[in-house]
Image (tube, one colour):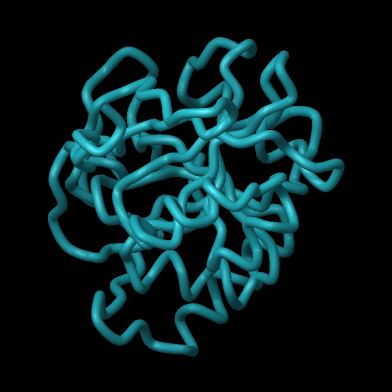
Length: 202
């Protein structure tokens, strides 16, 4: 179902509908500050498995997830002083930061190194949803694995149809992706250069 939301001031009653859906095991497509993402609650194991299937994604590639704030990040990742300063400077923004995970992160979302990718996008819609839900949601680009990201909610609805409970229409977006930076070592390591400036990592 296509659900239009105001990108500047998301309607609370529509946010509540999406949150109810997520709490009941739903899967949604939603706007971020780069392109559209697909997600469910990080504690929805069946939903995560369904997203792997609908995207045709390899199981050894764990999904990142969206937090609503730095304080929420601290629940799911071990954040040192240097990492905190970096995230405070660049978030919300188009970055995925890889951090050592805490025990609160489900095993399905961990790499072999027990790390996890975490985002706080600069997009009011997805942040309001995560905040109202009370826990993070999965984030992965709204496309079939190996294909280009999709910035048009109508195309997402056509592609995935009944496999999604809601497609939140936040307008046309780019097909850009976030920059991925690991903060697990002594210095930041760029794993993927995306729309977020990574010149500060050099």
